[in-house]
Every structure is written in C-alpha cells, then in structure tokens.
Length: 125
Image 1 (cartoon, rainbow, N blue to C red):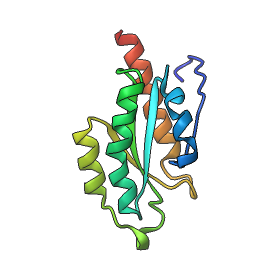
Image 2 (tube, rainbow, N blue to C red):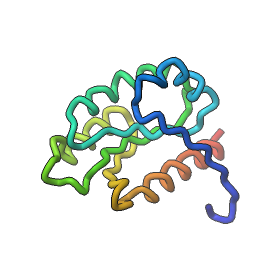
Image 3 (tube, rainbow, N blue to C red):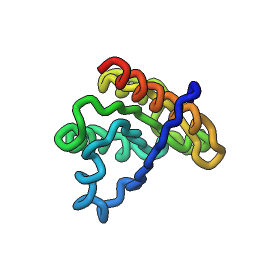
Image 4 (spheres, one colour):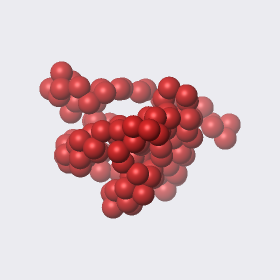
C-alpha cells in the first residue's frame, strides 16, 4: 500500500463458541479488528457490544476497529438498516461498512480502510 509492504495475518472466528477459550490469545498484539454482524440477524448485532467488551479487556487499547454489516446482497432478508449500523459504529467510534462476502462488495474497501487506519496510528505514535 502506497509502496509500503504490509503483511496481514487474518483470523476468522466466525463468532463460533468453540473458539471462546482461544479468542483472548487472538487479540493480544492485534493492531486491527473487523467486527462483523449479519444484516439479516438482529441478535448478531446485539452480540457486537458484548464482543467489544471482551476485545477491550484483552486487545491493545490502540487497536483499530471497524464495524461491518455483512450480507447486504440479501436485501429481502435485511433486518438492520444502514442507519442502525452507522449509528452503532458512530457510538463505538468506528468506521462502518456494509459488505457482501458472496458478491465481494466492499470487502477490499473494508480491509483497505482498516490497513490505512493502522498505518496512520503507527505514524502518529
């Protein structure tokens, strides 16, 4: 990015409970976190705040975070509006993206924004 080589190591726990015992070790030394919820599942949005509490306990306090509402390609199943996701992201002081992993919509943009934020935070400190 901008002629600087950046290496990403990405861990996807998919919110699965079987990773709960190991999840704290994933946060240590982490510079960036993407918190993702399902736009068609109101419970997945509610879990974000609980997950964020865990992250704040175990991750670096300066870790950059973005909030992502996934499955925006399934408009007919949508339960969470863009406004609701944006509002939560603003409350949590995060950028907000809506993505579709299936159609690759906004996936690159999400990672690029996170990497830029991480890079900026390193330059700042």
